[in-house]
Length: 62
Image (tube, rainbow, N blue to C red; front, top):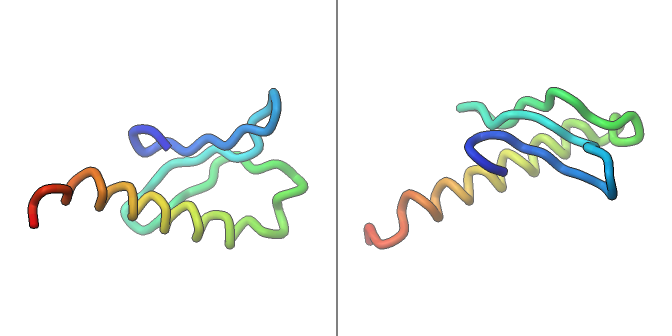
């Protein structure tokens, strides 16, 4: 995840691509074999992006 953009690669191909939004993650491209778990994947990525945001913005403020 960089600058709100999500890319997951497997070997030499991109299997997931999307963007972080205020309400979660919007998946733009997803490999066919990952289609059945698309919602769970988006939820997990949203949780991870929220955690990264907290780590980057709240470190040292406590």
